Length: 420
Image (tube, rainbow, N blue to C red; front, side, top):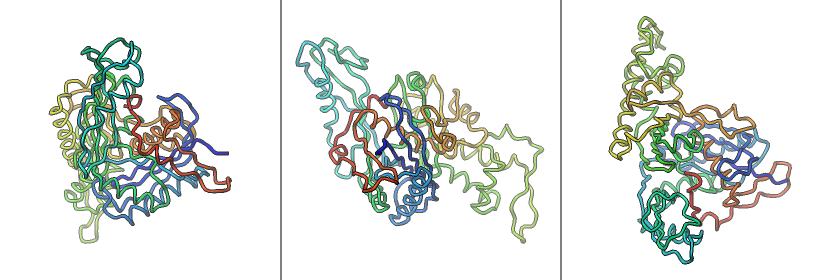
């Protein structure tokens, strides 16, 4: 029988990850998903979150998805793919509509949203998300759901997120060459927010810092809505590069040192502890204080956090983070991450790990590096629960090809106030 399966695809700078899950809950805002399969491949065709080699990207995508399908015992025809990078831009738009009846209806809200969304977009850009922030009824601001209220003038404030057309087209092309369709492109920090942030954190004010290998993406939520998006062009690979140059080791050895002895908060390391370095014959046996490795990692990671903090401060939200900072992504698993983030931002911090509303093989994805791909699956589950751009996939035992994604659903931008 056909199942409500969703697939998420996160093409990171270091790893390409795919997750296949089955939607088992029907609550539109928090549907439950059972993780069925997980696949990973080393990324070789991406540069700073942008496809730089179609063939290499296609190979990574195919391997990750085929591994996930094999583990799940299911095939999928389409994926929810994450996209991020410095080409992402966001802006606020306003839409006004007159109320046609005695009270505000869904049709009135849709008209106001349509006006706000109808902003001119440059030819080299593509609208990816249109997210209503709040409404005003007869200039009474701060209304979250105006339906049923009495008024004559409805105004909406909408957050429009656009991406570069070229990065989007190349990503779609790589996925299609791998034999799949893109059900929808989803901004990665918004997907991660679905996986690791709570409603209370979004309401109080929280900064999500998604530190990947090549870039660090930032999303600030306040009063329940997305307020700021940004990208810092540095990530975990920069920390690794500093270790390579600072200690005279190879890239692979630097990654091994990070994994075995790494700590991004220098005060946590015992000053008397000594570690052995991988060495060539010419270098001979080498030992260093573990504190030196921590110092290198502390300095570069702290610099990245300071750049994020500066961006959030310029956006005017640094003093509105009552719920603190949540750090996630592949580079967030290092010891000392919450302590360093707390020092830099001057507020509480925690590591964001997916886990809520997950079943099945959830243990396989309960790590910070899976935040984006789990969020993509949960985003797809929202679509299934809402009956929107959901696509049906088939078990391997079913004869015949899987149906394609509804092309009309791809063109229609569903309002995302229930998500972000």
